[in-house]
Image (cartoon, rainbow, N blue to C red; front, top):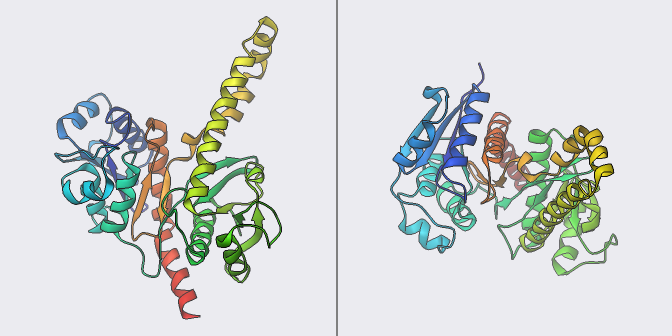
Length: 338
């Protein structure tokens, strides 16, 4: 039997907590025999949700907390003052080795601040990076960073590229992942000061497969596997990606329901269309790991439903079994020694 992966799930985080969070956790527990889930949150609320399901009772436990960090709260103050919140308690368990990973749909700011302050960065990592998988024509790409470092330096982006390559190769299974830096053109001399400074540094890295600049319009086509940028650009790309995808799905569904002929056509193509549209659903890929920390922290969408929570837990299992944190630390130390 494989090693048991211990995952803490913030049962109080997100718009649909605790209902959808608990539902997703139960689904993951019923699917994996090699996980132990720890749900942090208001005990009565969490246990009332658990009563609705059948699950292996020895692999789901509830750790009672008395506080909840709300989305609108200032992150730093919330982490400092709400020591008994579901987020702080969960992150502390990861720090002390009582759990391997932490999943939350709660306050992004609190998760980012808490991840760095409580779990801590891997030695040598200058900044951790939030890195979601986004759908492309060929599968998925890793967008790094999309929210953790708005004012990044070139050295940060180089580390993002290395961490992203390790994640894509060992978690997603992409051999020699192609790395591109987001730019406004393909030419090396284009871009802002940060991109111009980072480009030659990435060219010099012999431990990644750097393919040059990538324009935003090339990302959905699958032009590279690791999309490197600072968080302001990454967040704009992610939100536009999600917005356009949502509108297109609604438009396609609406167009197929306009008259009898299109409705008949829709019946014929429904299986293939459902499969195609599903590949562009962000919830299918779980949450965004905060790469560069000593333990795994995964941030899911605030509006996450059970399926996204389940897939985020799936990520944690793969991340732990592939020893991603150890691989990142080894790669960073190898470069420091050179």
